[in-house]
Image (spheres, chains in turn cyan, blue):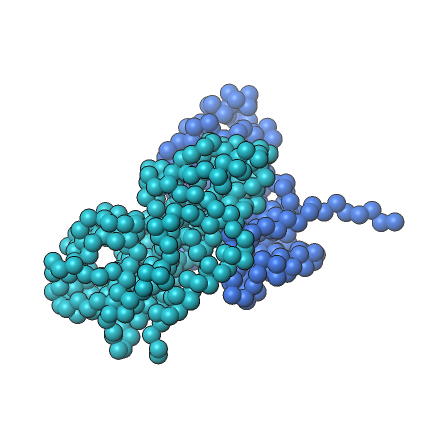
Amino acid sequence: MIPALHVQAPGLSTTVQDLGRPNAISAGVQSGGAMDRFAHSAANLLVGNDPGHATLECTLSGPQLVAEQSCLIAITGADFDPHVNGAPAPTWTGIFLGAGDRLTFGARRSGARMYIAVAGGVDADRWLGSLSTNLMAARGGMHGRSLKPGDVLGFAGEPKKPAVSGRRVPEQLRPEYGDHSLQVITGPHLMRLNPEGRRLLFGTPYRVSRDADRMGYRLEGPNLATSGEELLSFGLVTGVVQVPHSGQPILLMADHQTAGGYPVVATVVSASLPIAAQLLPGDELRLVEVSVNRAHEMRKALATALNSLRQPS
Amino acid sequence: MRPERARPRLRIQPLGDTALLAELGTRLDTALNTRAIALAAALKKRRDVRQAIAGYASVTVHFDPDQATHDSLAAAIKRLAAKRPPMAEPGRLHRIPVFYDGLDMQEVAARVNLSPEKIIEIHTRPIYRVFLVGFVPGWAYLGPLAEELELPRRHVPRTLVPAGSVAIAGRQTGIYPLPTPGGWHLIGRTNVKLFLPDSDPPCLFRAGDRVKFFAAQA
């Protein structure tokens, strides 16, 4: 292994993530992967990687890292006030670190999850086709766990040449992180809510509770009563809003259980998942119904933004 | 006139912009499950399908939105679902030893008004079907459980159920593969490992397999 970054302090919870392991869903293994796929993919593209390379996902606070040798990195997603050798460093931009340079972070300024990509990709344990960390199974990533002080991250491969710093994702190409309206397509079991429940679901804000992690967010707000017989368990996807007996909805995120039987009343569209990934306990959100066509337009706009970051090969 | 065979209506609905849920029916039924598994296998062969996961009586389809739309895929699902399902091969049979000394055995015995011995006899009698593998890594939904043992889930789920616990709820039975929270009634435990993280696939049971429990001697 060629060392890239030395972990002096890991931050609150920093894990290796890529685009997950969808082929393992039929074994009950969570697909997992980066929560904010836009920020993860953009960080990779800014350093010349493919979107599927592994990055570091840092939740709520940043790590302290020292470059073992010169490398091109990019920091995207949440803004945790990055510094290189004590001087403020830009986000959403490719930056060079020289050997011995220290990457540190200050206080959280916005968002919940930050991504750090390294040209060549972060190396880690591959499990069932992915480098993503699965904490429940204790597999993948850095030996199935969050980073610890003293860990050394290697390069997964040769960085793409030429390495070019200063490439940037302009703000207008990023998801609208400040707007906590999550666009949703109505779910297969919406009609298990009565008209009042449907009005509340789309008409009132919900708050992300403290019970919020990579598996999903319990939401707090008006109680939703569902009717009908118990459903037989079926395959779930990231972004579904399910309503358990308690009547408080749950938004499922990247490490969600693969199957379940609660009514699914809405599903957050793929273009809004990056925004959902950056929400914190206490944040208010609104579920806004959109058409399938509008969801596709939104998805294409983000895909086009990412494509514009690809280096000509 | 030939009597028309009652076929439950196929319901296909979006799960966001890159997936959909095709529900074949609403009953816990081996024939429906066989059709769901066959439909998932057929869908997985399509280039526009990324993943197809069979549920009890449904298929969740993740598709490539650059190659397919909900409408094009729904049409394909209707065509595939109308075909006669292939002859289901009997799944592999697993014999699982169980120590029937679960934490909830006495409570279950009281609630279903049967002795623990009778519960063991009823629980070990059938060959269960693996309806689906999912929820957490290696978990398999097995059934149908005998009606005599049918109980709703515990009102307050346990925050931690030990791995290897053999449990029942509704018309289902299962084995906790990992220490996880759980709301089922624990009637026993097994040493057989359900989750095999270093194998591929990483689980002992696959959808369509068959499982027979027997009482192990302590």
